[in-house]
Image (cartoon, rainbow, N blue to C red):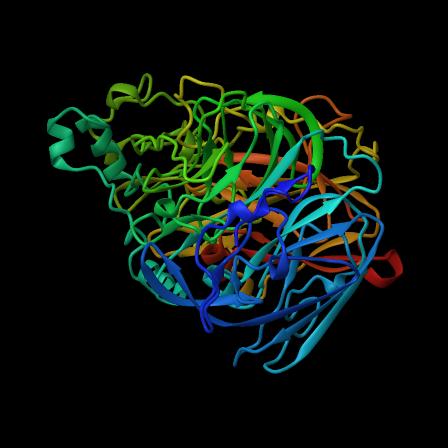
Length: 585
């Protein structure tokens, strides 16, 4: 059952039934918002069961891993200041786990097998028990294998102890995800065989003749570098159906409103691999929270939500009409729509997919170098294989192609086949529109517009600074931090308890990476100190860099990784360890 949250009660509940009804052995599409029965769980003692199920999308059915029989799993609604006991039973024939994404808790309950606990064996029940120390929009998911990609995730809403500082008349939780009938291990294998296997939007000779996209000279240049400007997403709409609350585009998930109400949308990107561009044509959105933390309200028309991020927005529809909630994959290979409407059965206009974007030299970490017209300013590319790279830091000549591989650019990076390039001029891109939204005529949110509603509590300057490079060989589908995969014995990142450290993330790849740190929030460094946004996940644009200041206040071992699941699976993962001084000796 799909039901909305309404502060005015549940009087309209009976009119809101949409989607599939429960059938033994079949997963129901999960809820977005406060619901009745098994679709919402609250209180101090909550029971969850992980099991196999069949999930139906677009008239087809496939194998899923469901939580209490639903995909997504049930909404867990908690209260700041309470204690919660979550008993998780594994009915699978393999180990499983649940990570409570964004929640501040003792590390032994963080839910990462091999790091914070041993995992949950088949037939066993593991009890997570911890106090709720925060409010906001969060979510939960498996950290075992690739189970998350098969439906093992759900939403969390934590109400504040006092009055909610975000005023609204009604709210809906919208869980975005990507679903494939191809098993995630098979997707991974295909990508290992050919990194561009699912990119069906490559440039063509027909497009060149028609004058679309790049010029012939530009294409020659990208070809000489053995790089593809359409390589924006590796797992695409060619294999994914995009979902809202478990429902595909044709199923038209609907959330109700009464004209004149202020409606809060709690938006969670629970996808395995897809960053989404989100808009509601004809309706402005006021962003009021990011990653569960309140921000100073900022009005926008579209924003990009990286994998694992959450945004709360407030909309104020005044007309008696339906509005389309549109989440488009950043490579524009597919979209999902939901509907906000005064009545069930209403359908909003669904815009066509927009033209897919192309990467630029900036996305390759070459700064603002001008590549227009097939030439970077002041440079002759007629004989690129023989060009002199001496004046271009970080660039070298390799096998007749231009690549950025000068180890002096990043001496801590372990060079090898897993590192195809190093950004010679990475830029802070937090004030830039994200990938694919650079030229939209309407307002687009940037990270630089986010300001925390409350002053950040730790006003200390960092005592030290570290660089972490996001590295890859995209052709071989190899992903790592500093050129080292986690499976290769990557050393933990060690912090002293309560020290203040600045971490610089440098993206040496041509894809954005949503980087998530468990057990902590960090302050994204941009603009003046005081009210910088506090997040648990930050999306680092291609060729860009993002700095965050971390107060290492949570003792224990914590996962730190790219939240694009196949990138993490391939090796873009580290352990952060926080110890007292005497323990670190």
